[in-house]
Length: 125
Image (cartoon, rainbow, N blue to C red):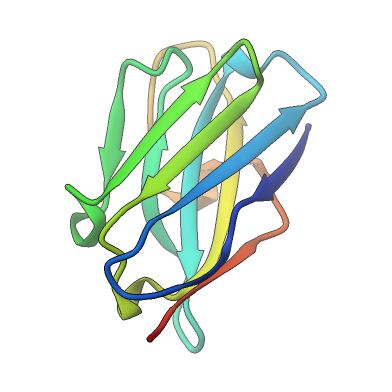
């Protein structure tokens, strides 16, 4: 499966961005999807995840209430809407996928099999 992320960039604190991650190669609706990020000098960390149906979601505490994950199985795309961005959100963001047979989610990056190329987000005035 191939993952193609887009939507990063430079934004001022308090601004918004929306990531898209298009998935090709297999049936998108059979994948749990996740978003992770990695800031300079830090380990990759969990941001959000969504189950294959879209009915189960989870967020890391630092982004809860500001970020929203969603998916459109007809378009083979997962989204991450990021609002009220803060300088500490600056990182390279990655989308990830894993094939599943149940409606499940995971925060563990080692659980995911396929990764997008990473998209830079810089939050700065």
